Length: 297
Image (tube, rainbow, N blue to C red):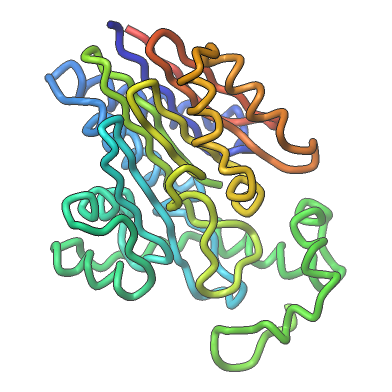
């Protein structure tokens, strides 16, 4: 069986950023060529993506409403049903590696301060993922809520403009008036792994969790293949997207068709993308531009 490596930089990420996805895929290939398995390769790819400040994961993650807080989610799953995830983890460089450590415990998901303290217990050092890009993005997003935006975040702001969002403030103090990455790998032994890592959406209350750390939503893997999703987390969760697509693979539906069927479950206004690998095929699909890479060997 040939290997396949698929990476993405998030639904709606510019095609120009695909060089980062290629770099991540090549890192995964190096792991496989050294004798590593699908899990090791997928983690290596995701670390590269988390370290690229152009992507909304790890370094470069989105700020939450308060303009100070960064909480990140990540998960990993393998075809032998191992799963590990963290949600709302803070001040670590590579959430995906902490999620992989969770796989070594009886738990599936650690959240918030517990996830961060777990990382410290395993000697993951303190790290500030804030970038100037994230600060600039936050400023533009807040301007949109004030009716002074440039329109780029109008669709994201729309649900918040219909409610008294300041009454929901949960950061402490007064409310100011003011993309996910992933990898899917099939190794030459037929083992699969899928990862997801994200800094969240444009507008987030403290503690918000999207699809990325939820089994069957952001990722799913089994003997028939592996799936990683990206896009609007709440909508992906509602459709249990990754497990839904995986079930189609189990039924014998080709990877490309399964990916397109998954995308078709969403209205055009909702950003969504998929990486899908099966025993005999692989596919990348999105209803938006999406930085991505595919290596088959």
